[in-house]
Length: 65
Ligand code: SF4
Ligand code: SF4
Image (cartoon, rainbow, N blue to C red; front, side):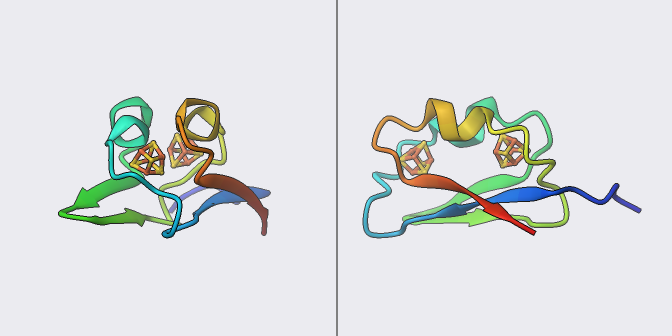
């Protein structure tokens, strides 16, 4: 079972350019690009925020949980 985390990330679908950069940098397989739809697996996300820093258009934001 995944460890409890304090935050995950949320995607702004209007801003996302579907570039795949967040998928490439996620070490936990928590992001997946399905055609023009970015899916974030909340069970896998550790809240490391690497994807937030990597996204070129600022489409990802942290969400407290
Ligand atoms: S915060 Fe970290 S674990 Fe979560 S989707 Fe982004 S890169 Fe992956
Ligand atoms: S890095 Fe940003 S723009 Fe690129 S697929 Fe991820 S959320 Fe979308």
